[in-house]
Length: 332
Image (cartoon, rainbow, N blue to C red; front, side, top):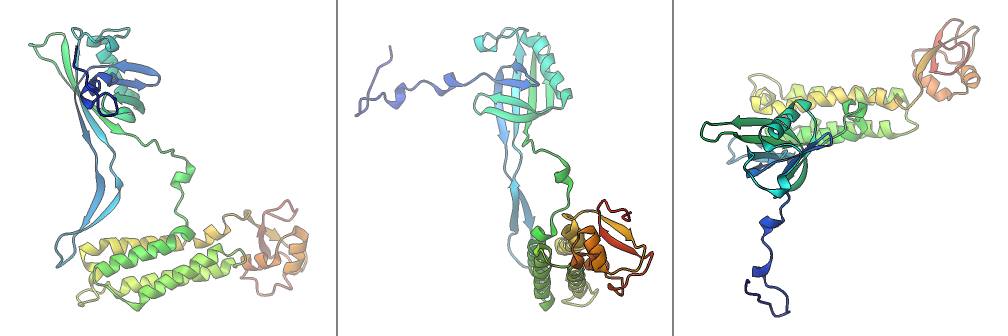
């Protein structure tokens, strides 16, 4: 009988605590409701951060940017033999070869399952690869290394494929672009103008009373400023103005192009919450206010949609007027 010692409080000492290994759960792999238990020899775990190294001219070391943690992967070395006597491993079929073949068949299912590792507990992951070895010396026995990869199980739906919101990302995108430009030694008043233009565009999209035409103008101004910034630092063979020709400046150039693409969708984002736009065909000379009353719509919004019409007080017969979709007889 082991010697029982107690500490000052009369509690069992650390030496008397049961062995941690004895409390481990048996390893198992459950997929689509089917559990497969198996013996483990060794477990290897690999993780870390997704670190991007940015080396700068004439500076020691590199600037490190992190985009978050890497997925965790586990290399699990196993042995499959019917001579293993472990009560917790017993299931309906024998380890070799029936249960081993069932384990290997789960790879083709391409499904996320629950891996239980003795030292880790349950983990949601996928069985990525396996390497099986059998030898003459170990008959009716197989050694298999499995590689499991953590699955965060993000839901993929229509929202996952939508472009980022201009309102939510335009200013942050400008800050990132300016930071990348400054990292290459590029400085200009146009970069400050780009920040101001981004703020104005962001406010215009958010303001409920802002006209679509004003949003379009602010987006066009912002795009012009971005072009001016790019052109200022994209002059070949001119010292100080050739920064974007350097391969190390590709991040700044790419970010500037993304800014232009997002700003170009500003009008669509402004009107995305509004009904679909259709043409209203006039049957007699009317004003934009007559059409607004007939359809129950805001005349200022209709004028915004029809800025090409010269006289809103006298719209001639047959002129198509852009309106929001209704059940009116003249809407098309």
